[in-house]
Image (cartoon, rainbow, N blue to C red; front, side, top):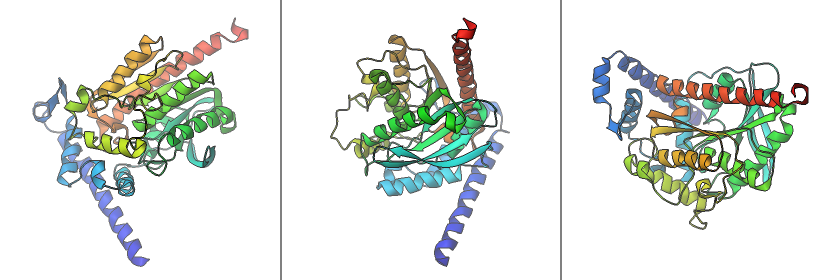
Amino acid sequence: MQKASASARWIERLERLEHAAARRLIGASSKLPEWLLRRSARVIDGARLHPEVQLLLALRELSGQQGISSALSPVAARERMTREARVHRGIPIPVRAVKNLSLPGPAGSLSARHYMPRAVGKRPLLVFFHGGGFVTGDLDTHDAPCRTLCSELGVHVLSVAYRLAPEHPFPAAVEDARAALRYAQTHAAAMGADPDQVAVSGDSAGANLATVVSLLAARAGDPLPVLQLLFYPTVDSTIERRSMELFSDGFFLTRSDIMWFRKHYLGGRFDLADPRISPLMAPDLTGMPPAIVVTAGFDPLRDEGEEYVTALRAAGNQADLHRVPDLIHGFINLGSVSPASHVALLRVAALVNRRLTERAALVLDLTPESV
């Protein structure tokens, strides 16, 4: 027991040193001449990788870290993601309160975490589904971005831990996400939030779940989320686009990782064109909630996310695209070591604030008192 405790303390010290080293290197790089930074940064597809990210990727390579799929087992991959989240978590962003919850799910209870904003009054509720390829990730790995969204948007955030593959393959995650959205819509008022302003969000696989539950609600005639906030979503597993070729390796998320996640999530037993897997392939995208889709310039998933915006608009929906040209997949988790990543998330928050304010004004205009 003492050996295990000593080992844990040693690992924690190494993680703190790694985090400090990354911050110091990035801080030192900011003092270099801009022309030198620009000249040394990689340029692909007309975009220049941010020097901070280039340094982080170089550190990752020097430390021998490869793609998540190199961990071989899902358990090892989860442990790696948890460790990396600890390394990059930084000082927790303060919110009014954080409460762990247990929500009813279709196959048992679901762990969730409620972040309460400092803002007073009935504020919107954002249901957040974490990324991790449907195989990795949990409430802790995405604590930092959830705190940032809660603080910067002044909204309640309900982060939900859905069942993971391969122990619980598709469609378990979709069923859990639907149950979580329904719970949020029913219990928003009890949580101190505005029941008329329940939105959904997520990153990567979590963004897939956010848009899939929106699609299923639209097709079933169920109450819709007021907004979809999608960070670098995976929305089409049927084909590979140009960004998959350009950024297949060396930019955190690799093509091998994507195939590895897909194998564990689907097991080759399902039609990749199923809209619950590839919402971009849905025959009918009408009546969807407004969407804000955030993509990263150096991300293999970039093109499918941006094509989804085009499809949503073609179906008559409001959809905003916000590409962060110089960052990579997963940047919302890098805010504590990469100021550029933090600023990018703040800019997205400002855009979301405008959309929520516009909607609140529209609802007010439609009330009987104002007609």
